[in-house]
Length: 248
Image (cartoon, rainbow, N blue to C red; front, top):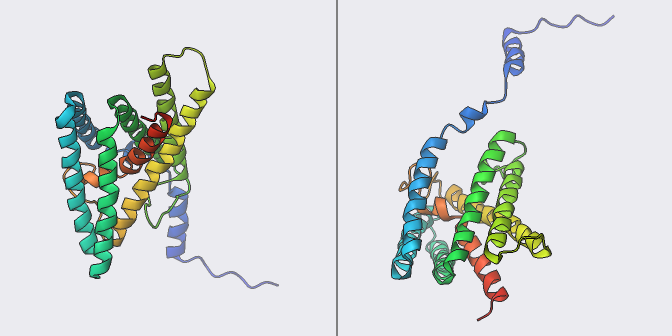
């Protein structure tokens, strides 16, 4: 005969019922910060769009201003990243080259290409935001960026690919499907991965520096680097692709 099992403790019983009661967090709650983020995004797009429309020195001055603010946020992270002066210096030197190269490339690209680059990055963020929160699932790198999921990356790649596809056909004026259209779709999807890599890089720096955001300049988004972390590497990669496909 088997011995009688001990009576279930009240604490264990409560835990068991709690597990059964757990439900998926409603999508509306998971996107509760959307209004603030959307309002800030509208303002940012309006300001950047006006600078791009004015063009010339205004556009270049706007890029320079964003770069300077970003470098200030990077310096803050470097100071908190390590107490070692050499480590701080390396972060500042590499970061300055990284931000400076992206700013230089953005300032030299044709305006229609800049619009395409920005649109791809926005599509990546938007697609990742909604698909990640709607689907959820496994995290990509929970220790670096707990909110990033593989579902979000997939949604971002799809959205960025479709935007790149649309930009290609709107600019070349083709009406029929072509192999280059598929190439544009693939480039957009790859650029989404590049954008996410830039996001992970900044998230890693913030985590090492024990910071939630790079700054507090943009409500709902944090600092400038929080907003352009994906744009920086995409600008560099897009510019290299553009100049190789359209040599002077």
